Image: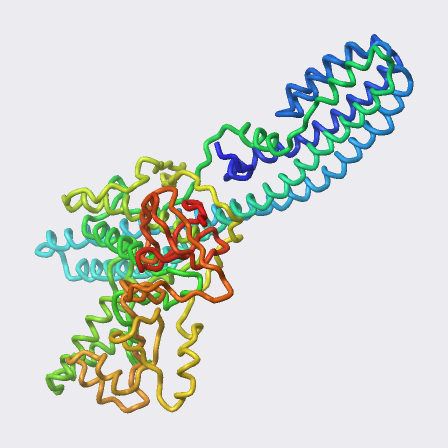
Amino acid sequence: MSDKFRDNFVGEKGYEALKTLMRGGNELSKDIAKCLQERNEAEIAYVRALRKNSDLLQKLAGRAKGSISLALRTLSSQTSKQSDAHSMIADVLLQDISMPIRNFAEAQSKEIKSIEETLNSKFKELNAQKDNDNKYRSRQFDKSKEIEALNNKISEISKQGRVSSKDTSKANTTSDIKQQAYLDSSVRKAEEDLKSIEKKYHISTRDVEIARQACDAEMCRSCDQFEKIELNRIGEMGNFIGKFADTMKVVSETMQQVSQDLRAIHIEPENDIVTEGRANDQQPETEILLYDVYAENMDNTMSEQRRKLSLLNWIEILKRDIDIQKQTSAPSFSSLASAPASRALKVESPDDDLGMTGDGAMCSMRSKKSAPEDAKNDSSSSNDDDGGMGHRKCKKQEKNGTEVTQKFSSEKFIDRRSVELLLCLYEASLYKIECVYNRLMKLPEPPRYEYSSRITRTFNEKGTPTTLIRIPFQPTAHTPPSAPTAMLYFARAMPMQPESMVQSASHPMTRSVQGQSSNFGWALPSPAQAEQAVPATDHVRRNRPPRERPIVYTQLLTSQPPYSVSTAPTAPVMPRSNPVAHVRALYSYKAKRKDELDLKKGDVILLLETRNDGWCKGNLHNAVGLFPGNYVEHIS
């Protein structure tokens, strides 16, 4: 178990344990106040009441923890010897100990109630997001079943029509054609509905994860608040016990030994709070809800071809989500969410029509708008030259290559821990879908996922699955943000040019990949450079009027780090006001992203920056990157 108090309370189970601990500590304070008030009555009733009070203190000691438990046991053993106490002790117990403890407990009860209300609202929102996800999850499966049933009917009508075509009349043939046309229309409408449902389902599952992260963040803050409350409570208990010990000094010589024993009581709030946290013996785990696809379950009714298309579509969506999240390398970095990191993104002119492909159990379809345009282009193809034919071919390839990956709008979140958890969501979902696809295609199993043994699946009464992955909880040294906001970071939100280039307002700014090791960015190239960026087969596109010239956004290769790396063996330039600091690696660390450093135990790193999220930036062997701050120690 972790020594840090808040790391012992994670998720809904951790919330219930924290709530029990908060209420238990407050009730313990009230019970102690009540017990000492009874001690006051026992002083008046003398020996008989003292013995009763001793037994009660012994029971309360079993409920307390750490030094408080030891102190209560000491009080219980010494109370049995206090047969000669007088009224002064009774007055002190009533006025200076019992009543102040009760008032203190009531004041803390209000603070605890406020913390509980905040946590209840966060978990209520999480449950609402889960209900919303279950709704769209069920709709997706129901609509897919409906489409499969309609397709089966169409297949049966086609088979019956071929068998009875020689013996049936013309009226029956016309009836079959009408019925088949009606079913085709129903299938198209159902597939359009499924598009909308799956888009909402894709968003709802992500929202569940965001809401869960918000609950975790609120749990961290609530644990910190309660830790302060509990430290104050334990400290006040020590003060009250000290008052009781001081009062015992005025008792007769028979109480001198009792007074000395009580003065020996030492309250250790820091150790007690660790003991209370460790009392929660549950294993902290992060529970992530994964994507479930209708085509995954081989028992579900679905044609093999549509099953393959559905699985391939989801594999492409999840791979795109993974690529987008892996592009994040620093809190200040943002890029076009729909741009792959290994190539330039081209924004076509408004007259370029982009189609959409279906996903789930749907087949690829062209929109109604694109159909007549394609027909028009086909009818005029005989009059086009070779350049026009190359233009249409290139444009069609670009459309087919990007329409699937641009189906859903994926967000890129900046918080590093949030990115890791979202990557876990996407990678685990991709792994289980690829397993099904490879078995279907009789391909080798995909590489085993790190947490594949932690994936569990349950089914509701309708047979709709819910898949969860429970990964080990990773303690953090800082309080994470509430949750990443679901917003896209577009290129227009970034500075388009550095300050040194602002003076060149007469020419658009361009970024050259050769000859400079700058960080990253997007640039508006000059017309000549824009023409060079267009493939040779698109010379027709270069002949457009100037107002139709496409804007080309050039992104640097992802192999280039998001910070300047000097090839010279000199150390990075540090501000003169900041002293040079070095740290030594205590443990080995394997970089998980391109902007991180590989550490070996004993490596000495030049520290460049200490970030608020617990990560550090440093220089190791002339390579600049990030590394976790809890893996190193400062050296002089």
